[in-house]
Image (cartoon, rainbow, N blue to C red; front, side):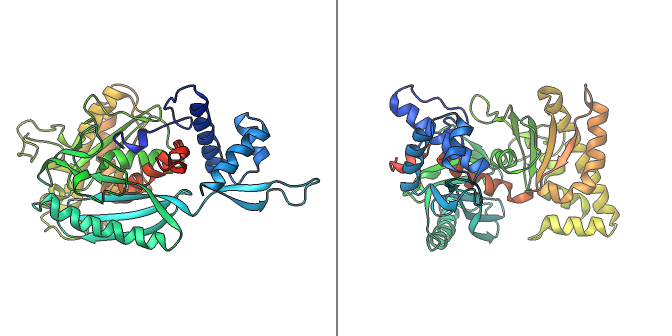
Length: 402
C-alpha cells in the first residue's frame, strides 16, 4: 500500500473509482459503511433512504458487509411500530481495526481503534529517542505494536493496517522519513523496520493531529489551521475538508518559520525558527527550568502558581507563535486556528499574547483561536483513525483481503 491510507478515498471522501460494475459496487459498499458509521444504528430501509438505492440493492450490500464482519445486526430497529421491524445495523465492534503508533522525541505509543472509533488497547513508553538509531527505536515500537495487537486480538479484533506518526518530513510514498531534525533521522524507510504483516502508512505527526481534529472533534469547520507542539512545532492546513500537503508533501512546517532572522541556530539548519522560541525545551530554558518527563505539566503547574519567570516565558512563546501564525493566516485565510498537542495544556498562558499578535498583524478580521480537546493524543488517534477511515472508504479491500 503506497498511498497514505487517509487519502485512499472512495464514495465517502472523494477518490474516484472506475465506472465499471465492480467500481460501482465498491462505491456503494463505502456509501453504506459511511452512512451506518455516521447515522447508525439504522435498518436496511433507513440506509436505502439515506443513500437513494433500492431496499433490495442495499440488502445485497449489507449481506456482504455482514459476512465480512464490517457490520453487525443488533436486533429490531423500531420496536413498538406497526409491521415487522427491520434489524438495526451498526458498524462492528469486532473484526478489522486500525492500529496507530507514534514516534515522539521523548516517547513511543501504540493503540488499536475499532471501526466504531473506540480505543480498545493502548501502550506508551516514556524516554528520549533523540540520538538513538532508527533500528533501536523501531524495535521498541514494534514491541508496543505487537502488545496492543495481541490485547485487541483477545477482544476479537484484527489489524486492517498500521498508521505511524513521526515528527518530521515524510515522503509522498507514505513510508520514508526524509528528515526528522529532532530525532536526527534522514532518509529512513520505515517499511523495512516495522512489522511487515501490516499495510503501512507513515505521516507527519502534525498532519495526523490535524486529521484527528477534522474527524473526531465536534464543531470544527472544514477550513482550519491546526498548530501542535512538543519539542518541535508543526501545523496541519485543512482546506475544504482536505489536508493541504504541498508538492513534495512537506507543507505545514510552521516550527521552521523564522520569527527572528538572526536568532539561535535550529537543528533544521536555519536560525531564529519558531520552535527555538515556542517549543517545549525553549520555553523551559527561558523559564530557567530543567527538562523533565512531564514538561507541560511542570510549566502549567508553575504558571498556575504564579511563577513570574514561567509566565513571562509562556507570554513570549505565545507572542512568537502569534507572529508565525499570523503569516499563515494572512496567506491561507483559514476560518479558525486550533491549538493542539502540548500547546493545548498551556493555552491559558499562551493565548493572550498569541491573540494580541494576531489581532495586531492580521490583514483582515482577526482569526478566532480555539483549543483542541484531543491535546497530545491527536497524532496517535489520527494514525489509528487513518486506517479506520481507509476501511470505511473501501470496505471491499478488507473483504477481499486486498
